[in-house]
Length: 484
Ligand code: ADP
Image 1 (cartoon, protein in one colour):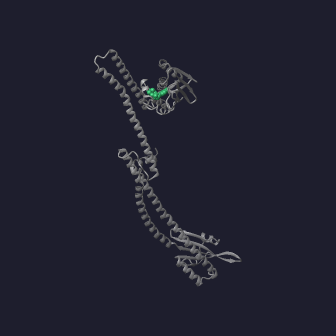
Image 2 (cartoon, protein in one colour):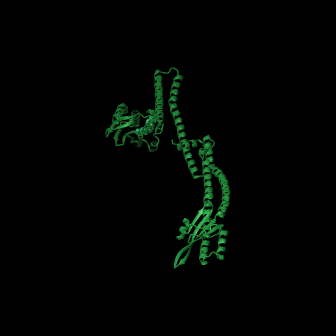
Image 3 (cartoon, protein in one colour):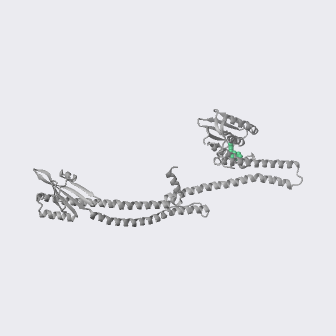
């Protein structure tokens, strides 16, 4: 992690810094501060520039008028003109400045400060000014606006520069005004900052109130005080959170209901054989001189019931194991044709006993990455069901096919079929279309649930289609390569 990342993670550890309320407040404060700084520096600076500009324009106009009068009163030759001298005094008094008039020999013929009169000034500005250029500078160390303006007259219809007016005008009054405004701006900024601080504390608190309401509503649901639904109407975002929470709660309720139903089903299924065992044993106990035949018959019934109990427990255990060890598939490359053949070999005696014809048809050789033991159990369940829920002299036909991605097998039978409503439920635990018939033939109602779990763990799918009294087809599709 770089330095920035480390600082960020350290800051994140401070709970307050992670609070949305704090962050909102901070953002408001920063925005307020930013506005104050813009006002303080931006507006003040532009006021100063504008005032300087206005003052410069004013003085420039006055000097242009003066330049005309200098020519009119021939002041460059004779400096006794009272009109011009009065105008010069007025100018230097009005703008608290100094005016120098330089003739075309670079001699100062008039200095309102009476210091440089008679001296020669050959500065760069003066030379440029003699070439016709007007120059304005602001000396920010001494707060002076300096202007050099040419005095021109028309000689032979040609404008000629015959002298230069050099002026420096004080900008002190502008600076003073700026300082006064600046103090007022600082005061206003402080007031604004205090108001912004108040807003930064109060507004986030108000904004966050609905979040606190939702948190306490969730806590109440958690503690079980209220219904398992929360209502949040203040913000759309909160409505989305509340909707998601309510959906989660609804889903958990479904899961909880199905868990409870499963537990009650399990207890019921486990109790049934035990009740039979107890009834059989009780009746043997209470009868005197029980004939050996009856004794034997009852004992064999008891053994059957114990076997049944055992089968239910085993099926339950494999189901729980499938649920728990979803990631623990023992995947290897398996020859599916060979696997089918070995299952057929095992089930042949059962099929013969029921007078059922077992047929296997393979379109091609299939090798796939599967858990051999678990898949074999799933296929066996399907074929066993085909045999169990069949009519006399019926058939069960398994066909195997594959494309480049999946292998598919169908287990079709000529049996009892399953009505449409029951087709929706047959993969549920303990669901049996005809409970008594299923129990008679040793069913637990768990076989298809186990089969479905196994196929889903292989990232496959299982579908059923059936016509009552005609037969049932289970279609299973499994990827050839296992997808993690
Ligand atoms: P069971 O142990 O009762 O056979 P399953 O989970 O294997 O439990 O099957 C659930 C129910 O689906 C069965 O009780 C049966 O009613 C019905 N069923 C399953 N396979 C078939 C089939 N091939 N033909 C008709 N009904 C079937």
